[in-house]
Length: 602
Image (cartoon, rainbow, N blue to C red; front, side, top):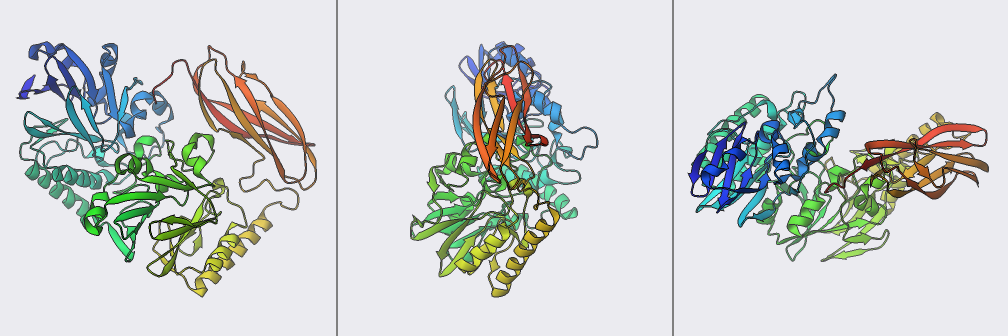
């Protein structure tokens, strides 16, 4: 045990464990093997109330079961919560054979542990009279965090494994988040510069040595990282983009040059800003995998936006569609900036109830919609009017946002077109005529500029409008030639049934309800028989339904299900077996049910 200052100590374990002492109580930053619990008496500590984790790695966390048995509250980074409280499921799902995912998520703890609360980025927590600000610090892991606090008249930064010593880092391997990438290097640079801007007096790493010359220590590491990044020809514009993340399309319409999916900013004369889409701000690369801990929304460029364009408030954000790269940052914007989320009526329920739907690219958490916007009706914000038009194609649940800015008519079209090419995904509920409809819509609206999710603005010409109309017609014709539409139409995905919600989480012995939708894909009236297939022992109120349906129509019905009290398990499956007259189509829909014996804190 070593004393750093009056109320701050460090214990060397499998990592540095920091003890923040207030009288006889203390907080720990990281935990290691947990041997610190046997040494606290030497500094007069009788109770550890809380443990705050900087990241999920085993050398930080392998002894947490001891803390659980001692009744200590465990706080973990919000991004990495699944790697603590449901890590058993992570181990079951993680690729091992033929593995191209180099993230060190296999350096996780071996068994799940209960979490008291998650630590949300940019939030300040007061524990035992000590205020600690959570600073997102991706680099060593995607979800790593640092803590900034004032203690014993010094500003202290607990930086996890972001920095080891001046110019040194604990692990280079940890910065490789994909097969041969260096994503964590770029993110480490961004995180280090962010910590440097906070002007701490002390840097306290999870591995390594206390640094009392933070500015010099960080600059030396940033310089060395930059040389390696340059050698590998990665992120050549990193510092340029950090300095000027936004570029003007028109004087009052900006594009964020750093985001994974383009987000746009409309500036008002009053100093307010409206975002169109806000997913992953300032990307240094994409981590392998798609689990929660591989995706990190943050607000890295917001301070620059305010400084460089005189913005006083990030007032509203409107998404073009529900995909995570367009909405992942909405909750952070609301929580930190007080931004209202306005969403079209045709997909607001997807944001608020993502587990209900069987769709790709859903964000992990519900996103509260503050205002649901109607289609085809002008919406006023500051001196602007926005009209939302339904736009199916890339996804059935999407809109065109139509507005005037600086004398130009602009359409924000999300991911509908990849430059001038169609960009459809069948599982997004694509319909074969959708791109005919969007081409007709654009011609009717007659815009000057199209702004999209991943490509440069398109300055609309007659040639462009003719080209996308021709593509839409060809796309429709080719699908008509390829599919057996003269016999039946199973729709965009080729299935005749669906179950809602797609994911259900319940307690053992609980009764829950689902809605089943079945379709008659034939052109004349047929008798549709839907049979629900569940694990043995489940009680289903309506296990089989028989219904006569006109051609190309759908029918929905609900049923209650009760599971046995003794049953528990994750992602148990049920399905709908579909028969239409003499045609047995088989099990055309599935849904997951997770059952627990004890409620888990979300």
